[in-house]
Length: 343
Image 1 (tube, rainbow, N blue to C red):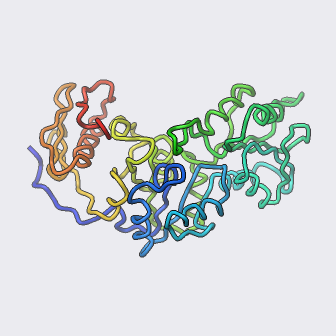
Image 2: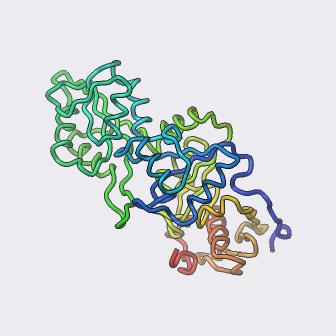
Image 3: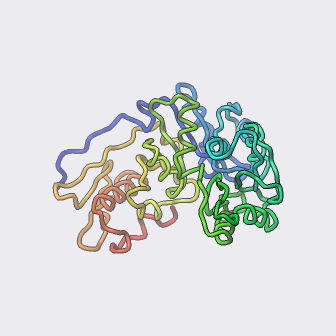
């Protein structure tokens, strides 16, 4: 038995928000194409709120990202885009002397930010760089990774220069599917040198600090498609988050999300930013959860669908709520495929 009758909420995920921070890959676009409903939903939000864009992609400049978004139908300036290279340079300023030589592994997006900050870019360990900054670019290969490894090996006295990575995403969504991300390239260097870099991008906090400071956000909402970078990072930065199921992580992954990677809101697509977000009601013993008539309970090791409700997204929200509240690991439960099949 539920503790009270169903309550109708009129609050949307945007209620009380002054700045929307949106990830790009998997949220706004996949490859060169816009994700359905993303552009019109973000344009609608921009009518009353500040909208900024955050990306771990280090291959492009903020200007090229803004131009791409503009081509898709969004009204975006370069200053509306926060990139992981910008966050990396913010960290670099505290790690290397001003104007020093920096070995850059990556593309134009990273080189541009390092140079704008007054550092000198090199591609060779023989130039005795003061630090290494590493980011993704499609052209990065063995030669560049080897130069980073040579530069990062400790000197004879045991000292070693700083190493900053823009991000450590294991994968990146592109038009043809899912491809290896910067995390795989960072891992190659890590294997060679036996240590880990300082990371600027999601899920670390530096990129969120850069965004909040730039947009002077008092109550931000972050929108992402990945639990392990987007949502974990927002939680670490203490920013409410929305997971949209249009990119990397889908229903099966969100059901299994650990306590550090759970979003505030779960959305099928960005149209639901503007729709009332239903409240979750639990039974007295916490064994069942209901969202707009969709009810899911846990009995023993079985996760059971009690009522379908008025939409698959509410059924997923109810299932997540009761599984997360139980504190039990997902591998100890029998979850019906209907909760995540095809989603």
